[in-house]
Image (cartoon, rainbow, N blue to C red):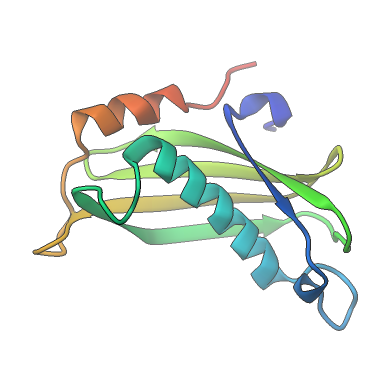
Length: 139
């Protein structure tokens, strides 16, 4: 099982009162948004600003395991690692922590595509090298 030490990239987010639902816990949509915040930052670190990079990125798949409830208030730490680098895609593994407690795990596939044809396009060599620097840390 991954631990905090397994992740080379971190994003911190503050929980908001609006993240809670009628049961008083942070709801699944808010947890998905926390994952998105972490994904956005690691993709920026690999490929640069979405507005100016030569290839677009699209979320192809995301799975989230909700491991325990969390409640407002608090600060969430999102650990991210690039678990796989493919020809046109990367797979991002994430774990979300509130304090020492791991409360969610996610895996996402991001496909890079040509901005004109909207078809998958090979990762640039510089992006591939950057992505490989964010591989999971082996214990």
